[in-house]
Image (cartoon, rainbow, N blue to C red):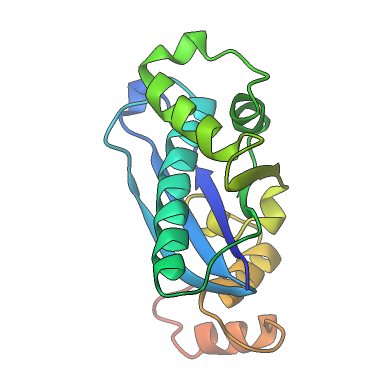
Length: 178
């Protein structure tokens, strides 16, 4: 099975303090690791936060690939990093300048090394509805939330809106329905 990762970041701003980011690692169709939290640095904008989180995902993905390789399961195919930021995809492929983000230059070069033509990863721009990591950082539509939650928790079958609604109605003191 191939490794994949998805990264996501909220649209934090320097005035609000550190942004929140998260990423998931998947083997085949199953999420095996997910993490979310405040960044250690305050980024200047959404694309910088996405770059920061993508670099964390690349590091974790590379470590997991190496670990599985040491166990005797060599990873010959390139792994995929799903990101919903066109700016990060452009930076990873050396097509965009990150002069405004010089404080992230080391992280950008790290992503470029791993996602370049000789690297072990490739970065792919995806829509937020396809990126499971979005559940960790964004408010989503109910249908999208249920699908991502279903994938994140490795549940089998199709996600059911009615089952969730029944569970929420069983605890009416916590939730309000109109």
